[in-house]
Length: 250
Image 1 (cartoon, rainbow, N blue to C red):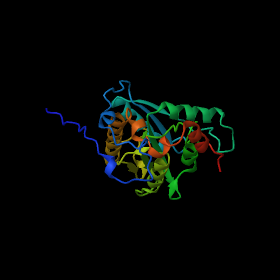
Image 2 (cartoon, rainbow, N blue to C red):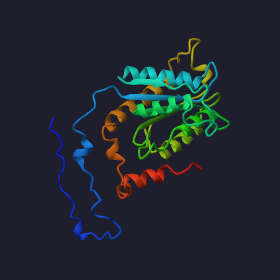
Image 3 (tube, one colour):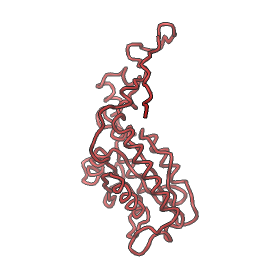
Image 4 (tube, helix red, strand yellow):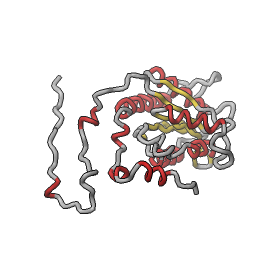
């Protein structure tokens, strides 16, 4: 099969007036860097978060099903147990559960967020986990450029409120949220006594979402730093950037 040639042509900027741009730092996209000739060979790493502490938590059961599918697709998965995680600002950053979450976020190359819908929104527990994830550690943003899939379970009819909220948060965390998503209605009917999901269109959709997440992760993980390399941040020194993103929390 013939491969498409990568254009090496560069645009002459001398005839384009851009007085506000520092041309020494302005870069046209480099197709070769986007192709990433050196690909990582380790299994893609996925962190899964769920939003309920009930003994029979359907958001946890859905996350466990997603983890099994990701493993079958060739991924490595870890599921964070939020039991014992304190409210944000109610404990120091070195709290055991906070440190565990931070370490898992830095380990992961991709994430799955699975929340129940409660009072028309994601649960407080789900939001607490996301709020504990730092936007930055020094000049490094732990979630930036990583892929994300969102799922929700509902006790009643199908809804998308929690999904929409998590998509907003994923964008705020500078993650690459994939297009597909999963919403399981009347979740209490969709799992058997052993906690396994029954065959259904809802289950098939979770398979679809995990397939898509795996593909997007494989496609982007090696080039994520280049995808989120920004002109404005190239203008700042690493020290200035670190001072700005580490300002005291509101």
